[in-house]
Image 1 (tube, rainbow, N blue to C red):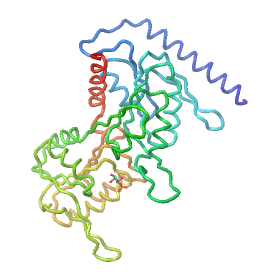
Image 2: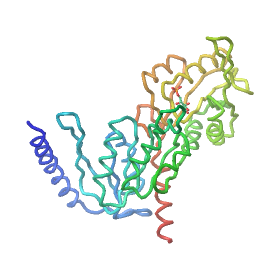
Image 3: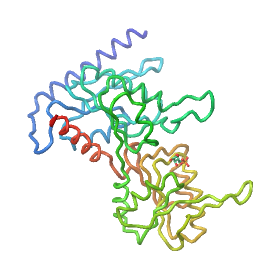
Image 4: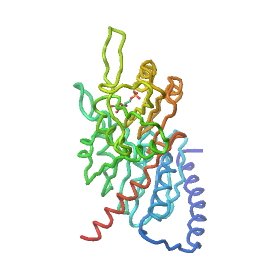
Length: 329
Ligand code: R5P
């Protein structure tokens, strides 16, 4: 089948499926909810943010538009959406290059709506500066590409808040540090020590710790020799304590695995790892468990088996606040 025929067939098949879906949806009675409900707002998402988007839609008391995703024979992505609304909340974490392209296509498909973009995890945000001559400012490049056709952006624990200025419209960042704290509370640990892997993550760790009024500290790396490093909490002692190492991202898990081994050597009772974005690349989850981490806790900004915390409620609250502010104007 050639490209054009595949395209036509794909559109035809998907259009039929969607037609059925639209008729079914129209035939359903409208449910009236109390509180926030916008009859002209719907949620739509990329494939890798389906669970979070569905939870968000529930919190907003609206529906998720179905999207059919497929590929052309050469691997290029294709999608077709169901019926859109005047206001669309587009949810898509940039977890890899395919997710990025899908998000770009989805935004374009929503061009006739007023679009709010929710970027639960923004990949490429760590290259937020030109560290060496000849490098791109990747965070800026991605922000600019994703700004087209969007009137407002919400990010979740973006790696560097400075990146927000690269979007071409109002962009706000929300933090799940408090939610991580609440989850840690539910573990009923005895007087846990909340530990940031470095000084840069200390304010995040302080926010987590404030949920239970727990001790907080950051790790300090001491170089013992050319090949040996020692990581210890800067001020507090980990002996006989439950330690929770918290960070915005766990990528390879290397930092936390090394720290965990050393904390056990120093007499820690048990070590947990918690983060917002569980990138967990290259077998990181297994690596962490093998290093003695009792449990890995992350949110659903990247949908994982260990996504124990959802960003949906916080995002919904932020959308509702924006909406009521706009209505007051
Ligand atoms: C870095 O700046 C981030 O905040 C994390 O600390 C980092 O991405 C963790 O990386 P890894 O899990 O590979 O040690």
